[in-house]
Length: 171
Image 1 (cartoon, rainbow, N blue to C red):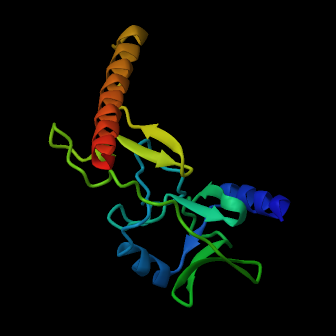
Image 2 (image 1 turned 90 degrees about the vertical axis):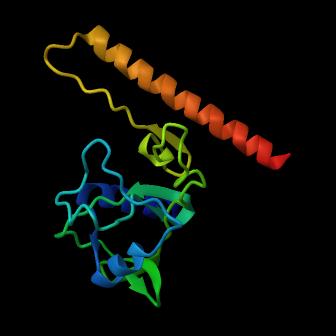
């Protein structure tokens, strides 16, 4: 079973997924899952519309997680089966879920920005840090590295504040 799920993950990474209209309508109102961010571009072959929310990742059997890169020509399609998200392919329909939206999403940081502008979770456990440093041809590698370091330090400060807040809530 694990071998089949891993093969499916590879097929999804290679071919992307399509979305049924019903699923897309359903996902617009879902607030418990992480939507695609496109912070560093996209793995989608076509962007449906930047205002339409699509899932960032899919959770398959065995908690195997894969990207949900949109391809309108893919034979792998995310649908609603009895009002539950499912993956349809080769006459198969399997239930899928999506990684949970972090509780810190939607929180306003001390600088007035949303938490998710700077951080996210990939694969249900990997911290993703969005660096806003822009490299131009006139910048040296040292300047780019410094700019990235400053962004990383800022992200660590945000994480530290979130951890402290979480610990205080538990007391």
